[in-house]
Image 1 (tube, rainbow, N blue to C red):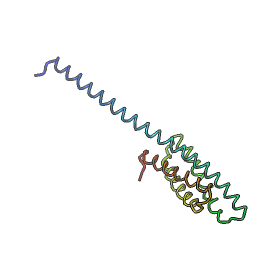
Image 2: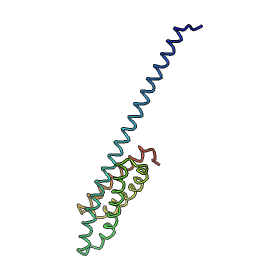
Image 3: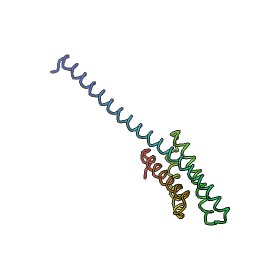
Image 4: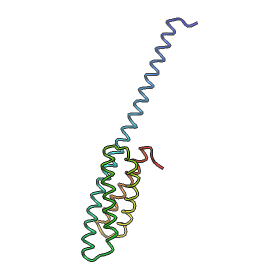
Length: 152
């Protein structure tokens, strides 16, 4: 038979174990939250950087088009659209909005397509820089979606 003293000691030990387990769970949850925040901020920055690169590349393409280089028309349109996706993604992701994963899934596709279009002009430094930023943004968006638990 367990006496009061033994029962009290066992109860205290159980409470201490539960409390320590709760602290460990809380620390794990805090680390997961911190990792998610880092992922969100890295993604928002990559999207913002990509948006600026795409806008710059679109302006470059407009100049090329004005010079009679009609092959830049598709890239101009692609860069403009990609910049819009990236701009929206940067805003939504930076605020941690509920549609962050959704916009990033779309942004991933837009960046992949834009990079592919820009890579058609390997000798052009503007196009090369845009393709590189699009690839970085695509990767950051994929990581963010994965951390958000919405990866496929």
